[in-house]
Image 1 (cartoon, rainbow, N blue to C red):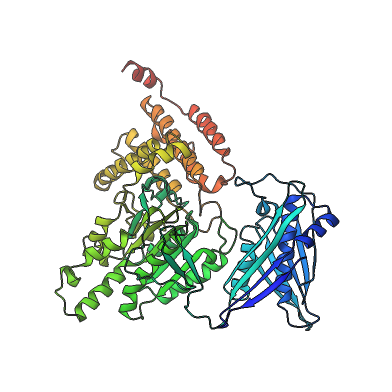
Image 2: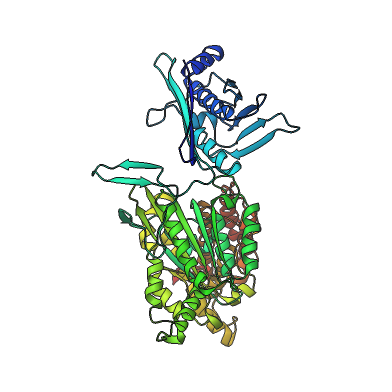
Length: 611
């Protein structure tokens, strides 16, 4: 016989309900002729609805639990009265899926995770109460816990299970719900006996000193890139998961623009955005933009994966100094759960200024430009908390730190920038002239660098293309060669340059405008997958090699430019959608056809061959 039991602690802090539903679930199986995975899904929903319905106080009240996950099972529905009497159905009872790797029924895949869990409470009033949340995984129990937290603001732990026997009959079924009630304190709610004989107290509140690093089992090598979808970063100056990067730049150079793009598109699970000493309207902009943007990984609002720490310029300096540590501790907390976290600290210069003001009030001996002598150690202590870790629980997680630096007057020799360079391995130097020319991200390709290239070489070879790093190096070499040529052009003009050097300048124009410049408002250009980045780089170098061959045979550079191929490649970032990369093959054919028509003066080709 099925039973339902309710309980509450003597201090009124925690309530619990548990139910056994073996007979009920077996009856439903026989009526609807469900296969095992459908039996498990409807059994879990019936147990949940029974416990939730029994909590209703009105006699004529009812509760409907509806799950639409987009999976092969279709809709799963369960309805309960105030006594816990329940009925339900599953839309496609004959669905059968392979077992999971751990040998359990794959209820999550059968239900799906691309939909919603909806609870409808009819309390006999004019309108029923309706609460709905997005599904986390379709396993029902964790989705229900999310519903209680998001819709009813009740911290909840719950579990539902159905054990199906070899003959497809129900061997056991049931579940439980444990909830904290209003006024619950910091008392111990459970005790766990560990293998070494000690007892650990479990509380609903965890405390940790924010200035102390959380422990981990092992720090792993940062050999997996954090893909951002920004070509100048992923292709030229990549950062690894668990890495550190600095984004220095003067006022108006686009530091916040870069960090917003990284927060939107980086392939991490959680983003911690720290507004340290910045203007309040920037924090408002983050809140407004992120609430309307969709996370490409989960399909939900970007705010669902974002932690925002707002410490604006009008707040006390002590709070500003503590905000950075609060952010990194929150990141480590999620890392210990096995998540990959990115921190956007905007900006560490304001944090350093807070240290300077606090140091001055304490009458400590100032160092360079009035900053405290311990500024380098504080910066190193912050950046050293990044890393790709094997956590104490045995899972892997990472904390990637990207800190903005605001040197006054674009002076990169000031103490904060110089000390930051000592402790980060990625340096994305922003250029005001690029920002004023509407070139975003305004990362200067001459002054920037990444020390992660050697660590990521194997990943690029195995996951992108064996030639990726070699082609990337060719791009960088061309850009540096152009920088030298532009010094000559500024002095005596471009007319004196030979055609092969003019070709370098034209190719670098394609690299700068076509590859490195991105449009955050264009659907295909705001985020670019690695395969498209490779193909763009490949077709650009293909045009350069073919044009260089013609120039060496005596073809004038003016004839090559008249083909319009360079302007065509500049627009390829817009003209080729991210899901139609086969169009690059058409571009290569067009390059071949147009360059084959280029006129080579008579005698020039023969002269070149003799040489």
